[in-house]
Image 1: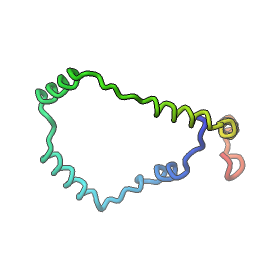
Image 2: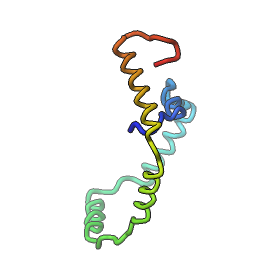
Image 3: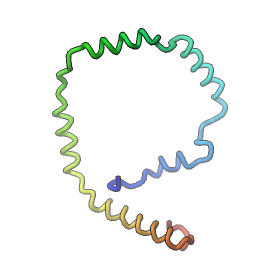
Image 4: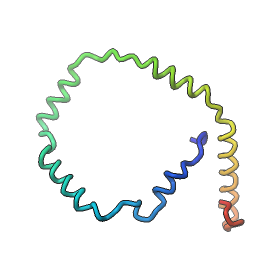
Length: 110
């Protein structure tokens, strides 16, 4: 959780008022959603139960995910999070001091 810095683009995207969604296309989105709901309605209970029974009745898959586990392990071992952890710890320390003071302090600092 503390090993990566904050994604500035993501923070900016969700910090905007109104989430940046244009209101102009809402009627179009509603029309498309209504058409799709009408054209591809939800399955009946009996049909959903039958498809779940068929899924449970299948033999287990013999998918081998060893290559993905090795790739994840190699990426995890190659990354040295010490520097990022230290910067995040310093940031948390500043934020804690900010909360304990109850004042804004210097401009531009948390």
